[in-house]
Length: 190
Image (cartoon, rainbow, N blue to C red; front, side, top):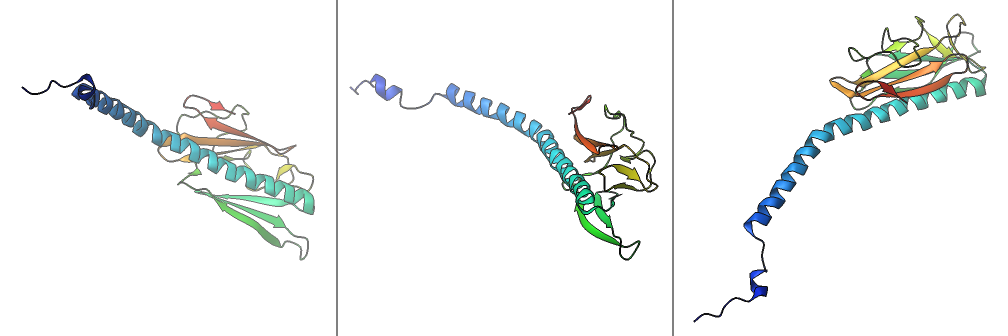
């Protein structure tokens, strides 16, 4: 007669039910991860591109104040920001301080149905500065149009087809205060 298995021998492996339970749990976690990852990636990339614009605007303002020269901002669709210093000699000459490009297929973009930011500076176009054709930081740190009038503005950006990547920033002209906003699916949040 064969020896009867001991209790320790019977507990050496996993039962079929335990294996199926682990596989089911793993499948559920994978499904959640695959569904969540693209949204999370779009949100992180949107934040990164918003920081690019924010840093460049701060650089432009600080350059204008420190060098006592007007610094022009050129937003070129779909994704380029150029910063240009107005030089004194010879009159009318300019120096490009820097050119930045949005990454991750992010563009100056507004998604249909999204309202203006809480600041209410305008959302007629993705780059909206009270109808000004050209905007610049002045030596005293204000944001003005090319005729010297102080303007407020909004810049909207996002990745086409990915509304959770939507970001916006506003600039309050008299003090050049910049506020950053994220779209949460229903409203703009700071």
